[in-house]
Amino acid sequence: MAYSKVILKKGKEEPLLRFHPWIFSGAISRIVGPVNEGDLVEVVSADQIHMGVGHYQIGSITVRMLTFTDGLIDDTFWMSAIKQAYALRKSIYLAESEQNTTYRLIHGEGDHLPGLIIDIYEDTAVIQAHSVGMHYSRTIIAQSIINTVSGIKNVYYKSEVTLPYKANLTSEDGYLIGSGGKGIVKENDLLFHVDWIHGQKTGFFVDQRENRKLLQYYAKDKVMLNLFCYTGGFSVYGLQGGAAKVHSVDSSGRAIELTNENVALNFPVENRHQAFAEDAFKFLDNATTTYDLIILDPPAFAKHKNVLHNALQGYRKLNAKAFEKIAHNGILFTFSCSQIVSKEQFRLAVFSAAAQSGRRVRILHQLTQPADHPINIYHAEGEYLKGLVLYVE
Ligand code: SAH
Image 1 (cartoon, rainbow, N blue to C red):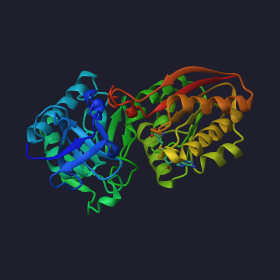
Image 2 (tube, protein in one colour):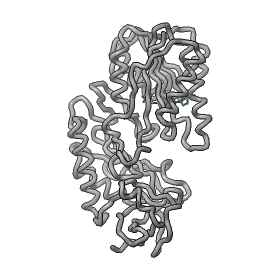
Image 3 (cartoon, helix red, strand yellow):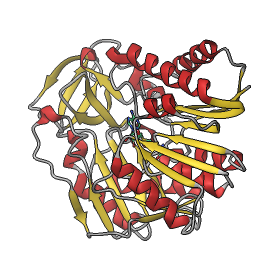
Image 4 (cartoon, helix red, strand yellow):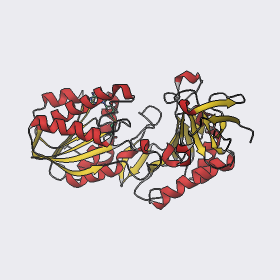
């Protein structure tokens, strides 16, 4: 194998034998051969046993494994990885479905491709690279999508803000293949505008598909408040479910525009919905309406371990405000998408908020990410979305 060699310290091959895809800098004894950020490297144990091949990167996670066999990382590898991911989405009836034209095709480690995210928006795929190695492989990845996924005409690359800034790459967002794209997708038969060029992340939060559907089921005749609404996903499902009134709130004016556009796209004549460009905490403080159904889906409050404590306080404060305002026998959907906040920690923060409010609270559902965001069983870190549906007396 022509790759430079990363030699592990004695015993540090253990996690790799269990297919954990990350090698931390502390596990490495030495590197033989020249190596630059983004290069493919061969990983061997202290006894020189071949462990696999991965992308090298400067930082605490030094190698992200792509294979645990002695196979090469060539065009065939990429083609086959994309094919496997597509086969999974077909077997869960998301790809080539009538009701859904948007789904996640590649979910990083969950699809054995650490550092890579690909979302499908009808005729357009959006690639997001989180590692330099994936950035270098973007052309073959784009070609593999076109060759594999039926109906894809455009591939947009959006990694300016997700690549490690220290890598000093001159990456520009733009189309790798095609241009334009329809920009309207179907999710559970509801329509949404998706703006991958200006929108947050890849343009739409596909990970809430199933949780939005559950919300729809509980929305009938309810007065509903959707906080941190972004493109208005939960609001549109609430209206579809027969909510009496829906208020959507986001601090971003553009998000409020998108929410209004998406409501109009599905319900051209609609007077049950109102959207507010305001801070969610302030909105709750000043709310005079009593809501039967509240959704809290804030952005990740913690992205690094050292701010975990503040994040948990943030969840507690936000949920406490919601418990204070929600109607008797109301239903609260509350989420955390911070990867470093565990299910138990999040539940504890919500528990503290409930206790502070003095209300009797019961858990109706415990929610997570959908099947197109699979969790590699050897990489528990991949479980990031947590939600609780609570009945508040
Ligand atoms: N629920 C959405 C996704 C939410 S993303 C969906 O289903 O698609 C988080 C959103 O929170 C972003 O749109 C961001 O603009 C908004 N946001 C961040 N801080 C906020 C704050 N303090 N008050 C209100 N909205 C906020």
